[in-house]
Image (tube, rainbow, N blue to C red; front, side, top):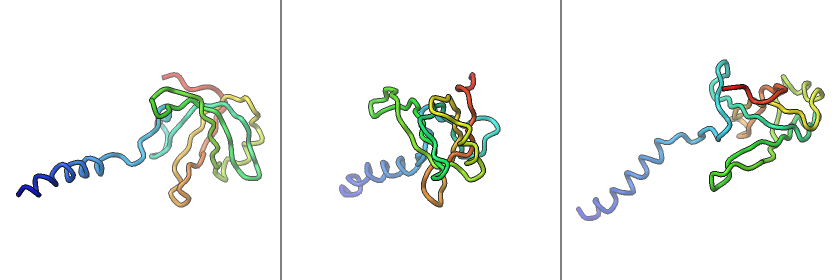
Amino acid sequence: MKRLFALLPFVLAAAVVSAQDPNPPAAGQQPREGMKSGERMVAGEVVSTDATAKTITFKTMAPDATGDRSEKTVTMAVSESIATNLANLKSGDKVMVSFRRDEANQKDLVTKISKGSAPKE
């Protein structure tokens, strides 16, 4: 009986952990109306683009380990359907980047890039 009570906290902790969302949206990455399920959006500033590799690198604000927001540079793959749009972007452009998790490759994949700053809430 004592062993049962000794194991009870671990069983309860496992139940709580398994009930949590494994991929919660990061701060600043909110789903928007009209977006597909699982898509996120983040505002940033273009650092560079690579049309050959089909990637975009941009700076964005993200929370660090302490919860303080700090600038982070992110490189993401771009979907085939919008790869031709990379030529229209230049370093310093303010953009809104929509992306989703590509389960096949276990990487984030950019599905839409819009020039301009974050939409008003």
